Length: 495
Image (cartoon, rainbow, N blue to C red; front, side, top):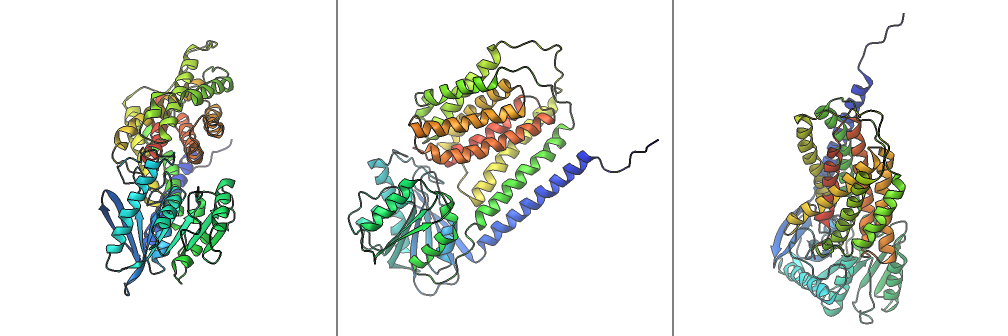
């Protein structure tokens, strides 16, 4: 006769361990964000409708250089904060701005993503506001103004500096196009490009470097980084610091994104014990018969990428996001239709699913709120702006509706099978990538796809947790829709 050893059940031990890891990750991330602010001060103002953030470090000793830092397409002042930390610690005053349509700026950017004349004019106007404000600050030397820009912002600052010889120096990171710059202008130009970026960015940087005085221009290729990670590379920060004229050691450039990553990790892990607390242990519904998912998904995403450009959502004032919303609506609708009308064998017996009671409704409300905080707070604190402003408040529910239809269709057509469900999400990521490559979707979709892929994988993992807890089939789709929609609706440019 054997006696089962007493102790804590394995499920309970796993819950305790996940809770502990989640708390530790959140605490470590919060401490990291606090430490990143040590030694610097910030002041936020809005001038001419343009949100501006001044960053200083150390006591003022006379007048300092002033550095305007401009973000790229779908970026924000918050994304560029590590560069502001670097130049501020070199003794300069850093000024971050949110271009029209981006971050905390509720104005729309006309022609966003198309590099149109009206879009360039709006960017130049916002830069003019930032430079003028910087020159009014009592601790800034108006003769030592430096411009730093990334991608779309790099194009804007080089064009602006070319037309304003009083700009002392310029830094262009991942310059998208330099053909319209006058030869030799702007003076004092540093060009930085990631070694793993699309070849066109490196070609542009090399061609622009050749069109100026070698003693007045410098080209730096940062190995192993692509279009976004180039912003957080140590080499990038050292080169920018030297060009601005500082002599100090730049701070750890990934301190803020790494801390945000820990917050995201903690929020992701904390979902598991929260689901157990809210739903308890229930018997999951057995898998249902499903249509041949690969065939259905292929047909649905194929139609989705084609129809999305013609759908009414394409006219939403959300660059790229309108296309993505239309793609998800069309694809999800076809998946729902397939699950409803595809001929399926009848199950031998009615499946036993989760109980339908008020507990699931309460869990849905709590978990939806948790999903908002899990994705919005870490991104906003350590990566980029993720708070709705202006038209984003009414665009958010529209984008969420598209996500909800897609995830509902994926849930129904896969019958709750997690691997097939993940495969449908992967097919959507591949379809968006292919559509952008062949020209069916806006080219900037390629910049959104990595974020979309991470969110789809995150949502699929949470959906699997909910299924194992016996959650009703609508709950994974609802929570996942919030998780997908919030970053899309709050980070892509208003157009």
